[in-house]
Length: 251
Length: 268
Image (cartoon, rainbow over all chains, first blue to last red):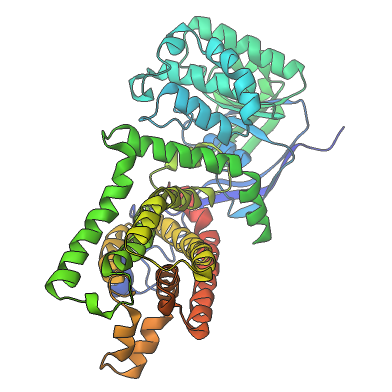
């Protein structure tokens, strides 16, 4: 087996529980930093003590109930969240589709967003120029017609189409996809399936979060079942699904 | 620190695109577009010229060239400083969507805001040069040295300030309000619309003058004035104080940013 492309060791993130959205200077002045109302609170760990290795070319499905840390895990892999405990090592660049909005800004047109997001993902100007038509093409007619409209007016399906088009054109070895297939229509889903199949055949590594059993078994060979912030099953996708459906059964 | 500098450098394309987008968004919706970046400092200059030049008649204390040029050379840098200050405060909060979905060095966002305002400053330079010709500014070696040095120092200062404020503002939203107040104070706390000599001659305790000159803006603004008024060239001591101040703020900003980064990402 080759070296793992993603490896997590004792991974944990802590969110502060009951923290008011924003600390006010007033509170800091009156209570001082010591008597910070958040101090002493153990906080809440959406994810803790997670260990796994993913080898290049693997397709891993992440399964779990809502709010059990699946998306948090993907964010950690993507590097948009920094762990409080343990380490996550990612060897290679990541092409993430983390949110339905794909990071688009509402005020910018589809075209501007495409340019901005693709550049932020690391496409150079030349690459972008070469791929531009392909990206728009893949996103479909609806998006192509609305390219000069602000993304504000896009439906969530259109956003996902454009977002996925961009991600699928990146050459990064790791692909992270967070429940986006759910929004697209049947035609687009079929396109997505083809693309993901192709990318996997090229030897990319896929980490997919989904609640859809069909999607998971179609692509993934391995399954991670996350329950209340802990990685409870790391086995085949069927084992993970069984654990998800049947509640947690200790092996 | 070297790793984050390298990180930002390798993402300079991203920086450029962010700045372009910033400017595009800012100007596409206004009819006067780009002219706004000139109208603001010019009208501010006009106000100060009226109050201090006409009403209080400060004009007498300048060699050859006149007070309008003095104000303009101060106002244009002030405009850069002040707009960068307020816009970098919201650099992370306003772009949370991008930051939480795409991994790029986070420093890019505040630095991008500073760079965007620098572009506006550059756009104003021709006006400043025109004013220098019109009001007989002295073009000497000090023009060639003073302007770039002032710009460099201000970049260092602003990057430090923007890193500090942008990350702090995620945790404490009061920062935005505080900055609005600070802007009002700071414009008078540096020799922008009055000559530094007036402070040095003023009948105030010595320690007040020392504290006043600790403000790195003082040296920067003096360099800007000195580009057209050779007698305004700051003393070596003042220059070194300002340069040191800029660097200290850069390190403080960078340090704070990295200390807060994990929490900032959770908050966004």
